[in-house]
Image (cartoon, rainbow, N blue to C red; front, side, top):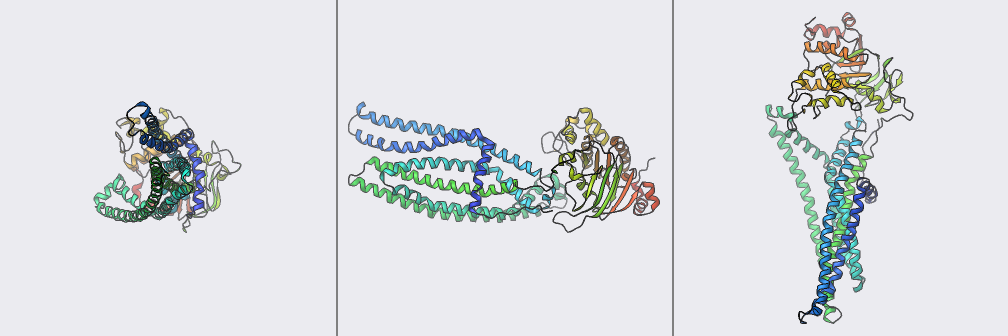
Length: 610
């Protein structure tokens, strides 16, 4: 299998190539909000320039009115220009509030849209990706970025657009004093841009290389915080052990990040000094002009405000551009993730899925090893499972039983050989159609935090299951009585994460998961260790219910328990990826091989009842 996750180099052109794709994502997620946001940004960008333009006539009208008395003719110009200034300030405040609302609305929509894309991709890729640490590193970076990156990205785009509009308007005002002033203003901000870009690249490189360490820290946090390891933490006093590992790792990560930030702050201080020199030189030039009668007090006030705001705007503009670049560095992880493609895909001309199985399942000479592993699980392995029969697959741990289930579900494809349902290669079925033909219980069933009813009904999510269907499945799985005793019966919330939830034991969760497998109307049923938590009496009763529930389905039991296997129509014994014995219970006992030896050495596994 050639599935892989590749690292990308930090190339400036490649990173800014993500900008159009990012804008497209924003438009897909929040098109209408983006139009309103853009309009308000342009308006908000013009208002500071309008205020700057009003400074000169306002100051000059005040100077002209000084000493002239409080007559309307004398103060009316001051009132007019001051009112205009006040109106722009009020409009700016109102626009700022509207822009803030649009920004948050956009960020929420974009975050949800990106999360949907990630979830869709994560549920569509091959199971082989879960075998690769590089995939888990990439997923961790993507999930971390989604928490805050959409808002940062929108603020950066918004700041860039708004400040660019304001700066262009201010530059037009400054041009009346000479072309060199706008150019000098721009040059004074370049050191800040260089510092921010360099910092962002350094921080992003650290973020990439520290991903594995941050995943370890997350693992230690999970071990210390959740209930999965709570019992062992207390019995073996492992709390201090994992706490030290967590604190040592976090101390190192924190120190590295603070060092990067300290370097940036020192560089920004130096860049700020350069901007201060530009402001002093320009103001000195304008004061000289005023002293020789070539400028007014209003000109000095306008120039000071223009330089002060303009320099801040230019710096902010450069910072926004650098932040966009930083966002594209992080969003590069997202696009890399979204570009992952599964190798297990639908065929060009798929065969319709089968509603029933008439002939059976045939495994023909398959060879398989897990991606990245040198251990051969199967080599030229063959097996036939007749339709409508209950067939047990037995063997020690690591014999390949659960791997066979994964291959039947087409989570992986064999390197050689093929698997057929009624003579049709399963690669010829559409993926969804193939898996719709299957239902099953996996070795480690998932305890969903939902009601008992929902935990069962999701086994057939495409069908509207009635209450009678749910109860029937639960009865067949031996879960009805335990659910009926819960505080809310089938409406009881399962698990202890949320209020009023009820926790089940491992065996009880297994019965609920088995009911989930039973409720699905599929011609093939695969059950991996379905009785691992049952005692022998309950196991015998359970098999009788399975026989009634199978009702013509082709059923594959993967088990290491003799009491489960003995009533199957056929029993296959596996060892190290090979089939070593096959037959009924009585035939295998008569054969005197591995199955018979296990039976005679462990008579307690046989039910004591009739």
